Length: 269
Image 1 (cartoon, helix red, strand yellow):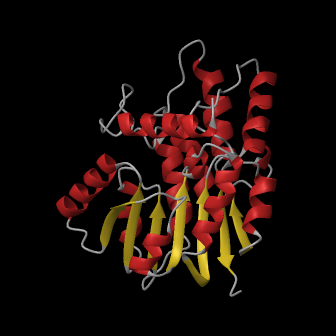
Image 2: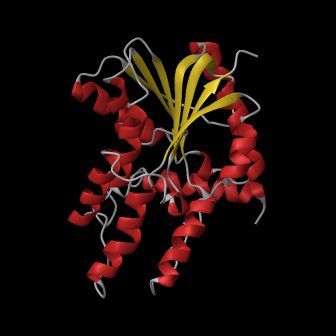
Image 3: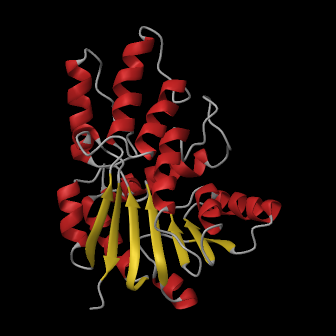
């Protein structure tokens, strides 16, 4: 499959997914694990404050953007699927969130966004770059994002990290569980490579790990419920989330963390 064909396939997947608010399992297509989504969004909120302008790239149905809007001065959600943008606008109007707006746009071509809005205090991506067709596109996207962050501003990224997925699958295999297969429309990023690319524009401020929650929900819970199918909605996952959010566990679970949050600060140059 050519890169162009893969790009078209990924876009087709999300265009179809956007036709439904919930999938067959009763989960949001853009955030199938509600506890993981809560972990990521909660981590992001730690770095938000009143007076900031925020851009959420790859916003999907807009629920994350609307949540973040409550903590900042203004929020703009961007997605390349028109149906997601339309749904997000409808939700913003229904919820009376006047400081949030939504537009159609592509992370690989953000010049028009800068022309209309200038730069932002905070830019976020949640599982956005993993939906690009190649590592070269992912590197290009980082440059596009950097051009939209004010000097001294923040880029907050929770994507899909290949090292963490490899470590998690190793733990699962040792526990007698099958490896988790990455969705065919996802291309995980190497944390090492991502840090190198980001370092061209940003200084690394922090990394908020989510490894403990992922170990609980992807290893302990499947072992607990076997031979039944594990569920993202199992109460044990909520316990894992609460322990993670209360910072009761250190970084010893980084080996299986494929979704932690990078915090980068834009350099002036």
